[in-house]
Image 1: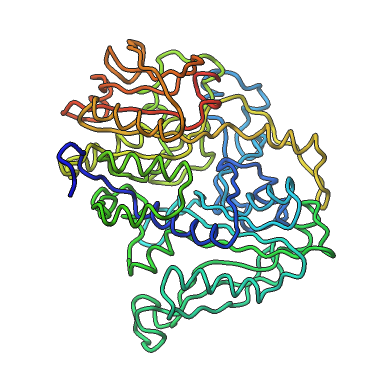
Image 2: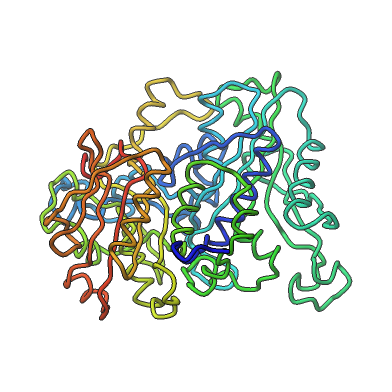
Amino acid sequence: MTSCSQPPRGSLHPLTLLRQQIAGFFQARGYTPMDGPEIEAEWFNFDVLNMADEHFARTPDNTFYLIQSAAERYGELTTSEQQPEPHRPRSGLVLRAHTSPVQARTLLTQSPPLYRFHIGRTYRPDALDATHSPVFNQLEGLAVDRHLTMDNLKQLLDELAHSLFGQGVVTRLRPYEFAYAQPAAEIDIQCNQCHGQSATCPTCQGEGWIEWGGCGMVHRDVLINCGVDPDVFSAFSFGIGVERTLMLRDGLQDLQPIVNGDLTYASSRAMDLATAEAEKSGPNDIDSQTDWTMATEGWVQVSTFPFTSVQALACVQPATLPDSLANYWQLRDPIEGIEPVMQPLLLPGLLTLWQQQGSALPLHYGGIFERARVFLPGRLPLAPSVATGRVPSGEQLALLRSAIPQQPFHLAALGRSKEQLLTAMLAALAVRGLVVHCREDDHVAWATSQATTLVTDAGDIVGHVGQLATHVLTAWQLSEPLAAGEITMDITLQEEKQ
């Protein structure tokens, strides 16, 4: 039985639970995680992956390109830089359109044999509807070794499909063309509704098969670009949509509740003790433990888009920012329905979600929380170009990396009780091995006086917890008092130090 002293259980987002299941599958087979940024250099997103300048994926219809939103406002651009598109120099930065750049980063810095995987957000200029989203998660798998073949790839994908959909699932590889794989294929799963027996099936439109992802042997030119000898090593890779997998597994017809912060959907996996113990047997990495701690403290995990407006940021950021903090990252060609600025903190997205759906959250929950990357502002260093077919030098690689803005993970939450929120965030930090001190602070831009600032022994500010100030409540048309908190998951990348 649950102790009366324990807070009500919250919930982990269904996407988080699926990510943990997928991670557990690969870790059990000797694959280890790899990582990479969401704001990425064009070279990593395209060039190193054998995608030439004329490749269709490089058009603004298929990729979000970035500029710095505040530079012109503050008069920091030269006359030549203020020229309208298409004459203005490009930043050389994009929101990654797939997770394959992580594959290239790994190949460039580590020696085979390699067995790696990555799960993370990707971006496309697609309006949100039942089957499309401008933000979605993708699984990337990479294996580099001697004598790997498509048969090895197919066997692994079959095992993954069986673990996610059940032993009876049938898959096929359908020949396809990808610039970075040869041979290449799309992965299809036999429709789990009609099993190919209905010409009018609404799930597969009578095709009998549903596309699941893309895969293939890594193109020899990509291996060469990354300094791997294709005559010695072969490699396979694959990319699979996590939201698509969730839809296929659970028979969902609409993507929107999964990605747009729907609170009813997000809280649909409220944890009882039996479920909690079963699901905690998955990957035990520090991020999973952090999410787990917030949920067991009574908080509901949500997923929001990382876009906001300058006006929204003005409500939660200091009124006068130093020049070094003035340059927010902005979409060059935003699409209808999303704001143009990449969030340097998570609170604006949570506030918008609470404004729209907060009344739907049952009172026994503490509130909502999100753990995701934020995009810290900074000066724009142009990413260097690397000649086609050439492995970048150490200096070029360092310049490419330095052109990428800092993108730490943050944890943010909204709730009705500051005390309950502070307890949950202190518990989440303790799980990460971080003990902090609480000090009273009257200078948190979004909070009333007597906010709590969390500080390490070394004096590093980890984050803040406090009651939302009146001007913030007014801006989001919120009538009830609310507490908020935001902390960095990496104290070496705090916005306070930029």
